[in-house]
Length: 294
Ligand code: NAP
Image (tube, rainbow, N blue to C red; front, side):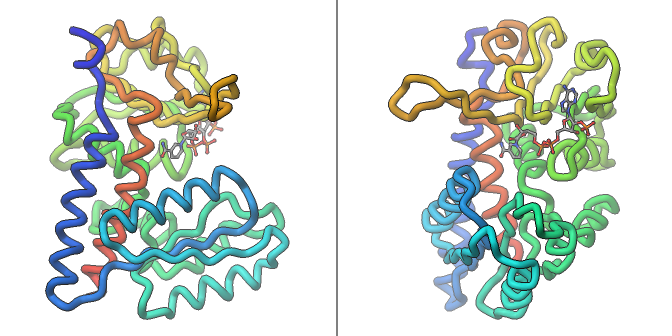
């Protein structure tokens, strides 16, 4: 099998999903309803956060959604941030919104997230959304885990009865991925092992994985000797590595793609794997929020 046949093309799958979403948005507008509106709250000047928010705005435009960004300086008080949250909760024109994380250190992130109206929680970060996900009830799933589920489904990877090893247990990626893949439902029904920084001899676990999902935030951590022959590898990690190119950097994942690709049956590249799926999942949730509210 050549390398190209092994690639799970997140960019292409995300483009397909964008087309489907754009068609639904156009239909909504044709029926005289306003286009879904996604707002974002951006606090501070962090370069990566600014890029993420700009990408989200651009993606909204591409599918015909309305977007708006509320900006505050990193000196903003918790009260100023909560005032915007309350405003967005009450604004009838906003279907859903995200609070770009991380927030400045002096702000209680948990308090801010708890203040988000669950009906507008398109990032799926509130305790309400997480509780519904855990119960398997309809809800906004967090964007990156939703993207991983869609990638597996749309690239025809069968998860039923498979041993999935998830490396990383964060609230926004590893834990929800492990919950979703172990659910009693179509495109899930996997047996899931979750590993983290306190797991000894991690390769003993990763080598048992039929499907390996990696979200640890450590560049090129997973090498060929940590992967089973024929495994499917989903690399959620993304890191900017400075170089002499025009951009000044290139992206790599948590998986050492070059070392691993010869051994696996399918693999997501970085860039072009999970990243595009995260943004399109946010659009999916915004459309869902708009449908719920119309
Ligand atoms: P995080 O909150 O820092 O969590 C990292 C997790 O990995 C923790 O559970 C940690 O264990 C575990 N871990 C760290 N080092 C480890 C090691 N050496 N061995 C085993 N486990 C280890 O990170 P995150 O927010 O989940 O993000 C993970 C990566 O995904 C990052 O590179 C991030 O940039 C990327 N990401 C990408 C997207 C996308 O759209 N593509 C979206 C979100 C995140 P402990 O719990 O024990 O500390």
